[in-house]
Length: 404
Image 1 (cartoon, one colour):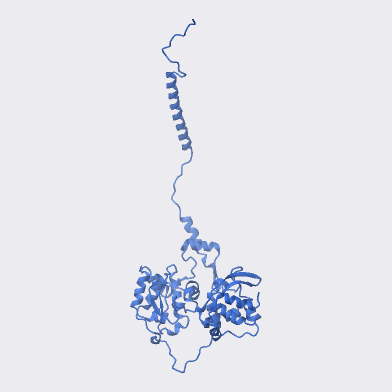
Image 2 (cartoon, helix red, strand yellow):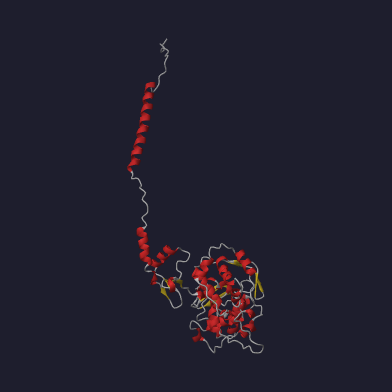
């Protein structure tokens, strides 16, 4: 028989117990070494050091730039251009709410007190208020109350001067009645306007549209200081409405300078379509632009086109119908296709519709293209009113003129 190996009492291991202890110790030492290396590397990077901001250089730069801010240019139309570097300084100095206000402070006022000069109230009214109250001050019946023949009565009520300032600063909400018409909308607050801008708008509305004829002889314009005194009251639109409710508003025939013609003595006022038309066109300029060139592909030009239409048989009546009833459908003007909606403008009234058409027909060299032009009169607009046409029917009328 073959010899068998003797029985072993101990098992053989790849690593002895002593070797395991050595491996454990070496692993621990290696981990410590890695941590030390990481800490050394981290400490090698420079540490940020906080230093308080030195504003002296910034303040000096702003002061030097602000000293040159009087270099803006005012064009004949009242627009203002400011170099970009000065515009940036204006924003940095005044903030973004009203950095480009034209109001200036006169340092050499009598008695040593500064008097704030006011910007142009008419341009501010057109840009901020005319969309609702209209450039003519007639408002939109049932939606936005008129200011013509209304603001002077509010002003002359006891507390009315303060009330008008509060309306622009804090808004107005609640049902009111003006000229026998009820209005129940919301007048927004305009606190974002500067004090001098609000004062200028109020003065314009008090003197515009023959309102000045209804004011007392001792009438005093609003000043920027008047508006500043009303800020900080923390009123809301409902509280301003309550102030209005407490006013005893005089009627037009009670106003100090209201002149009522005796029966049989009244004379029809001349139709000043030049002035009325220029004011009414403020409703059109956003689309057709102030130069009558429109926006290619969006809103057709009036320059060169109104006269062309007017000269056609039936063109005069068509132009009136466009403003009375609107226009919808594809048209061509100056070789460009347009397919949008022209809204109806019956709220302008017959006088303003006639005036704005005459204004367009005699502006932007259109007058050189007219044949036998005679101004459109309110009576001519009245003759076209009441037909109940749709914008599509007005388009069919245009197509029958043979333009396209």
